[in-house]
Image 1 (spheres, one colour):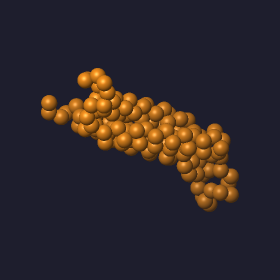
Image 2 (cartoon, helix red, strand yellow):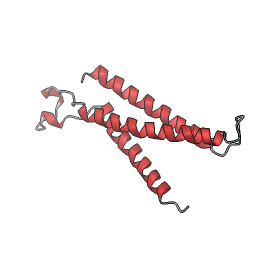
Image 3 (cartoon, helix red, strand yellow):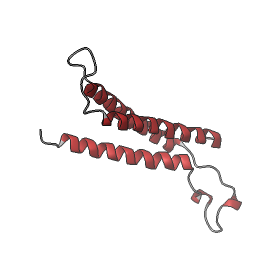
Length: 124
């Protein structure tokens, strides 16, 4: 994968993750709202909860996809002049988008897993 496409993937990752996190944060704040629709069962609470759940599912799925993409990124070829004396060329640093997607994705998935674990273990 070329440097330009890595940058585009990194920008796409940050944009997608940011939009979904903002949607989750915004919908979380309006969960305690009152009725807004014409139908008695239609509430802002339900709408916010639906946005929150859909955004959470999309966030988890997008992180899995981006982790897969990151694992497919080959580290850039480094010339022998850029490698420290005595180090092998394979010891070069991984690309920033790859590291960002791996660490960010794993952290977000871990937080989602902890939240779901806590949610399912709450007393009724």
